[in-house]
Structures are given as C-alpha cells and as structure tokens.
Length: 181
View 1: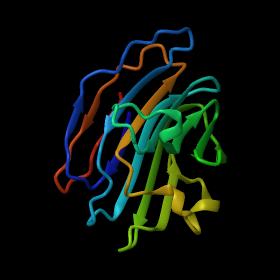
View 2 (view 1 turned 90 degrees about the vertical axis):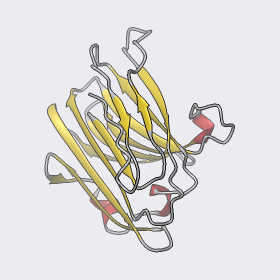
View 3 (view 1 turned 135 degrees about the horizontal axis):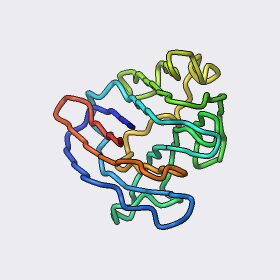
View 4 (view 1 turned 180 degrees about the vertical axis):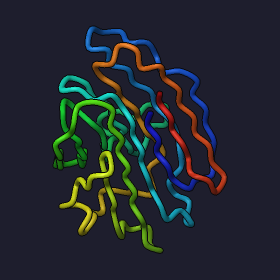
C-alpha cells in the first residue's frame, strides 16, 4: 500500500492500475493533485510493500506542465520509494540520489515533511519499520523535497506479479490519500 498525503482541495479516485505489459511486471499510474494550498503544512508518504532484492515501488511528484495527465520524465521532480533492496529519494532534475539499506519482507516507510509558513521544508522524519532512515536529509531538509507547483504524482511498481492495486485520493482539509494495495 502507498499513501501520499498533502492538504489539498481536490478529490480523485483511480479504481485500478493497468495490468503489466512486460516481463518485469512494471505497472504505472498517474494521479492529479494540487500542492499549492497555502494552509498545507504537512506532506507525508506512507508506503507498505513486500520488499525483495528484485522489486520496487516508488511515487514520483512533479508538475504536469503540458496538462496531458501524465507525469513525463522531464516533468518529474522528486521520487521516493524502494528499489532492489534499498530506500531511495531522488532529486530528478539533478539525478542526486540518497539511499538507505532496505530489509526484505513486509516493510513500511513513514515519511513526514513539515513545511514552514513560507512552504519551505522545515523538518523531515523518515522511518522504515520504525527505524530512522535518510538521516542525512532529516537534519536539514533540502528545498527540492517540496514544491507548491506540483500537480501530479506517478506511482510505479516493478517486479510484483499480483499488486492488487487500488488508488484513492480524498481531500477537503484532510490528507490526500493514494492507496495501492
């Protein structure tokens, strides 16, 4: 299950992700959301998956500048997820990557970014199964971890044959929720 939260003013329900088309079982879906809300002071991601050295799940945020509903490579800004045995955060514009060792089996990422009144990252708390990760970014979160211009998220799953997908976004001063089970 993936949950991405943000205080926003929109709602979206995506009932299923497409079926895998290739042997690597990659499945991709795009969701629209609005990160521009001025009273949104918390941005959080919760990701739960059966991790292995050969699978991955990531959520990628950015701005769908051309309005086609698809977050293309050139529109991606931040990727957070699990890939082939490690947790990763990638600043997509530069390719700068921060990684932490992952553990095989059922794992849960809890990632909470607090924003100050100017919508700049103030603090980051990140854990995997309750253990602190990304400590180098938690001490002083960089600006690339949030942008109020983001209006799209792309969820990518690789190497999972039966992802049993479900995506739901709920908003109105409650967090937007993107669930993938």
